[in-house]
Length: 143
Image 1 (cartoon, rainbow, N blue to C red):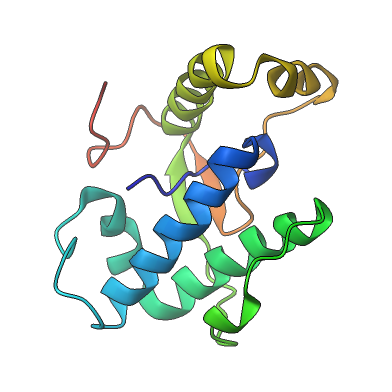
Image 2: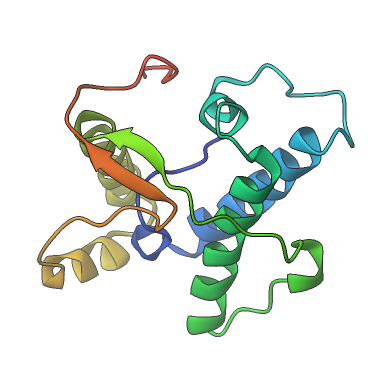
């Protein structure tokens, strides 16, 4: 499971579809609808949020928004209407790590999509997150 901290616009089509599916799984875990993946490290920051279920549904809402902007047809009925305004902190080191990891994946999987990044002036995170100083997060499983 990979719940990216980076903005979903950086993901190619395969990456965005995978993020949608994995985020729906995370929603199922956080709402107690499945017994699998309950200890997955990627879920830790959502579990620690004061409103875990609202945090994951907010996360999903932005993925859904990105899918619509690309003309995809993700099923929005799978996402609850509950949202949160409370951000989750993510370290700059984590964001940098994720961007580099994705860059390496895209060099193999979709080089033309990676080329679109040249026009991006500043790295953006998923709107649920707020960047703070720091290295790679403790929950990250390094490759």
